[in-house]
Amino acid sequence: MATPPLTDDIRARTVKRQRPDGSHYQSLSLADALDLARRTGGHIRALEIEALKLKVLPERYARNTQTLSLTDQQTLAESCAGIVGAGGLGGTVAEVLARIGVGRLRLIDGDCFEEHNLNRQRFAHTGNLGQSKARSGKMQIDLINPAVEVVDLAVYLDASNADELIGDADVVIDCLDQLDARLVLQQACRHRKVPLVSAAVAGTSGQLTVIFPQDAGLESLIGDIEADETRGVETRLGNLPFAVSTLASLEAAEAVKILLGQDGLLRNRLLIFDLAEPYFEIIDLA
Amino acid sequence: MQIQLKLFATLRALTPDNADSYPIAPGTTVGDIVAHLEIPVKEAKLIFINGIRKPLDTPLVDGDRLGIFPPVGGG
Image (cartoon, rainbow over all chains, first blue to last red; front, top):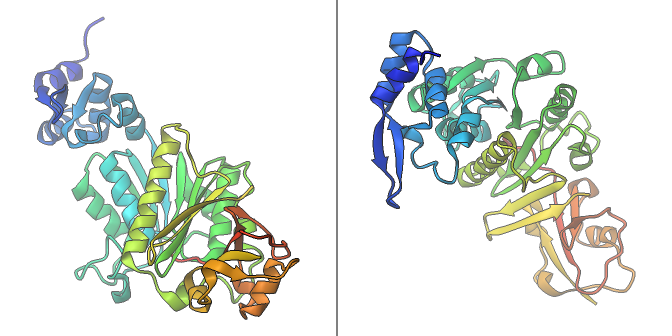
């Protein structure tokens, strides 16, 4: 069988590089990947997946290895994560997943940036106040990693559109700020049989858990919600940026482990922390 | 009997000075402590003893580590 031209092109651009530990790997630069993608008319994500199949590593992922294998990197590139909320948690979750190499992101948020978002929301800056969080996030991720295909969905998730918004995501990350919307999202994830990473923050403290479709889930944590109780004590404490980014990184870590089929997930467990002390504990929810 | 008491987020402000060795009478439940500290029951959303989530009516024993978290929902 003849070798596809793309394979030859990728091999021709491949360079042998050395890691800090002295080991070697086959590397493809961003400039070469972009050039090859442009010449073949495909997306750079597809080009990088072809490279990974040839055991060629896009150079931007050099420091992901060897904690991640080339196969892991390919799995991530072929995966899709749904990020519901593109504010404090969602902005950092999206950035971390883009940098580690999750190939497709569905960034869902109907809100626009306001000045009081600037203390903690990754994609908020003085130049995009008033603009869509989802669209702004997509524009910034395109600059961070053009091999990530971002679908920006500038709508609020509700019971009528949740299934459609989640789409074909392999994992969903709850970055919402309303308790009742979290339950709607969980229902949609159960329906679509997708694992959910859920987290909530208030002040310097946070909570995080992982919910598979068959798991007990958020009802027992959130309880019965009355109309005037759709938010927690963050309405009084605010949200400090280091608590938000810590929690977002923990969410991203769980999402990546789910995509890679790894053990050690926070299923039926709740990680809690308060960075004021600092204090971390994992609670058994069973 | 004594327990270790840990209150989170908005409840931190209600933490007694002797929280690390908080004296309790035999038969005291989590609910008794919540009432004594004047924590609104709705704010005692997540209760855990020795790292395991428990209901409000759980009796406490000597040496228990009790944690109480109010509802949090920020993103």
